[in-house]
Image: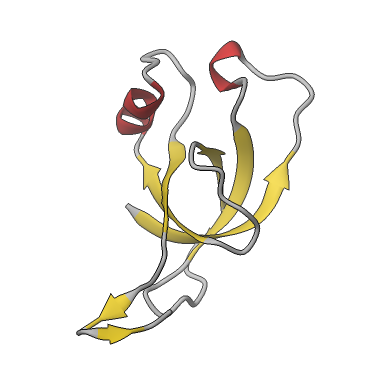
Length: 94
């Protein structure tokens, strides 16, 4: 799992059948202190995340396909949760 912040939306007028009904979002991986870390990712949104929200991203194809219940879906990364808060050592970070 990867912590990430939603930084944009990708609009596509044509999508494969497996992706219809899902938003495509651009996310920036972050560390526990919410500082950017690594390259941004294009992900499928299954939880209705919004701009600026911190989310949990599953970045592994087979697991992502199982969430969509489509073994042939051409995806790798998918949002599986919205983060309410981050605590490190019992201290709230967000």
